[in-house]
Length: 505
Ligand SMILES: NC(=O)C1=CN([C@@H]2O[C@H](COP(=O)(O)OP(=O)(O)OC[C@H]3O[C@@H](n4cnc5c(N)ncnc54)[C@H](O)[C@@H]3O)[C@@H](O)[C@H]2O)[C@@H](O)CC1
Ligand SMILES: Nc1ncnc2c1ncn2[C@@H]1O[C@H](COP(=O)(O)OP(=O)(O)O)[C@@H](O)[C@H]1O
Ligand SMILES: [K+]
Image (cartoon, rainbow, N blue to C red; front, top):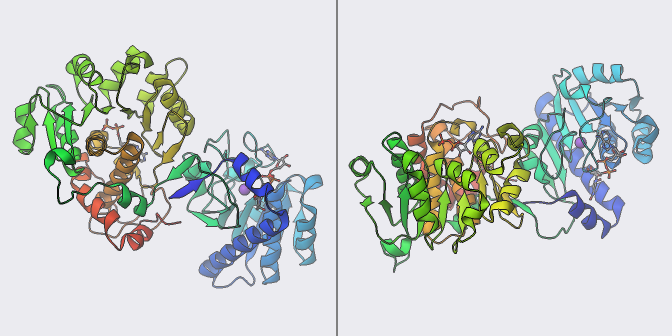
């Protein structure tokens, strides 16, 4: 499990320990990574051009000390100070002692920025407040040819949420200290961070409010049939999805559920005959179920379907049309529920559920806040879909999904996710585990389907379109890739597969 802690928690954990040794460890890890990058890029550290962007706090101090370490290895290091009167004194002295050049002229800084082999972003770290200040903003868009390494986190990204107010630096790699920060794992911040390397510095923070599953966590969560299992014990999922207008949604939910390990799927909806023609495993008509999925493509049947499922004393996943109807009814509609509810909105549906001034864009810009607010208001677990899928519980604890790919932004892939998460609910996983495991498996399936026979592309936690060797996928292909994703995550060699997927630490 990756653990991400808030600034407040990091500060409290830091206060228990002596300051300078922490900084020394952080700097040593940072300088070692920079040296490795320079060797990979230029063959050697000696003679490489390094630029340090130094703000006024310890984040600038880390960057300046690391610059000094690289200068001692022969790099030509210069630093530009963004708050000259407040720069970290000891670190500045250390850099000067190595012969490093220091400037306060932003024009010189921008010229160095353009030609440096490596840039260290030490403008602000966890002390950053409300976006970049004007002096720093040009570095967010200035042209460069070298690599940019963010120190602790990219300046301009909110450490606790991943929100970006205005401009933020965009890193090729982030070296973070002591623990992950939520903002490194959640878009838009995650997109600015690139791959994240964690340097342990001995912090002992409390339980993390934000986590990200890794392969081993998924393998531990996924249900496996035991010797005594039968289809009922494995879990029967009831599906009220699809309509005459949207028969495809029913097929895709069912496909997700069958590949998601449901013991059986019971379908209640108009296009039953068509569903059985494509999926002969499906049972039709009323009967016992251990969980429900309601809403995908349910069209004109939505009101009745929602009434029937919300009254059930088993977990219910509400998606798509079901969410639009729920938004109309408001949080009170879930007040009488005796079993858990899982809501799976995309940002447009989230905005509808929140009402007021909420828009899809605002929800996308503030994913963690949106998921938490919805979970709190509706008293339900919420899986907010999109570029970073966030799962939040009413108590505010959250999991963010590291496996997604934007190839999943294709019609019907959310239906597959609903079926998959529903199957895991029916198997007895609590909604938080079911939702986060489903998002992980679904994202992995999307990546495997996009990669075809190719190895998963090595790269950032968030695979981006444009990775070599990928092709567009359809929702059906995502469903068909679920067994491969399941095997990939649970195979004994899962660790190396995980590395191949760029999902390691
Ligand atoms: N907390 C810890 O456990 C450790 C922290 N370390 C480093 O220390 C950093 C935190 O240092 P600080 O607390 O000094 O804080 P920062 O260096 O992150 O930023 C605080 C300074 O930046 C200024 N500032 C705030 N918002 C700004 C903005 N939007 N634009 C420009 N300037 C802004 C503030 O006026 C203040 O002077 C971490 O990110 C990390 O790099 C490491 O050395 C290792 C240990
Ligand atoms: N930019 C993106 N990056 C990663 N995943 C995405 C992106 N956009 C959408 N997705 C994923 O694709 C799926 C789309 O679901 P949804 O919006 O419900 O579509 P549909 O209703 O057509 O099935 C979700 O799992 C979502 O997280
Ligand atoms: K930084």
